[in-house]
Length: 349
Image (cartoon, rainbow, N blue to C red):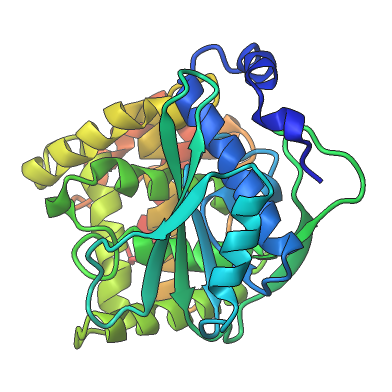
């Protein structure tokens, strides 16, 4: 379990020694988000933890902070408010309230805010809990303990249900499609788009089963299209993902306005990465992985190629004139080029 010490200024100061380049407010909010997650589980709420923080628990390689909790419930429990009241009565949070933010009318989603007094400056701050009421479907699920280096824990461990890497990878593709099912360009949420790209790059490196990714994508894609009342199919959404990734790879030579928005997102994303940056080159590498993943799904593949060493690209060249400008990436980033080459190959180039 997470100790009460995790919510103290002394603990935050200790943690910040390992995250000197990050905003302490973001680190503290991540700690409190994990605390809220654990309290929901302790109080007996049976949910699937599907938000970005689940990647922090699932993968050691996932090195970015997240500030909100996203969970999935089949329907609203009658005792949900009682659970929230009990969580606040234990002293970690002062109060809770429903956040009446605007949600697309057909999305069965509610938002709650949990308030605590920051140890940084004593001001009230809020962790958001987003609940999507939806059946589990055929998502691949795992049970993992709530453990991470930003929190202090003692036995017994508190487990939560999360989606598998492959299941999350399929879900994330639908979020990285700004013109269809994803976070749109036009709402000043460029950082959120880049968060999805970052996560896709990390998850791709841990990919196990393409069929599981495809199954997850199909389920989530069709659901999101239904919520938005869009008469589109999976192929359109996948091509949206591909096109968005390509916009980054071409560095402004393609869809200049969208490229500028994505670059704004990259610049704003730096505070969320553990002690490091996420450069344009890093984003292009992630985008190349997305382009290849999309083409494997569109081609119906169940096998995929993985980059091993720079030597593997030495003899590779993209000959199709439509895509040949991508050869410039070969010298600067062999890994990105490897995935671009294989994506173009699946396109018949």
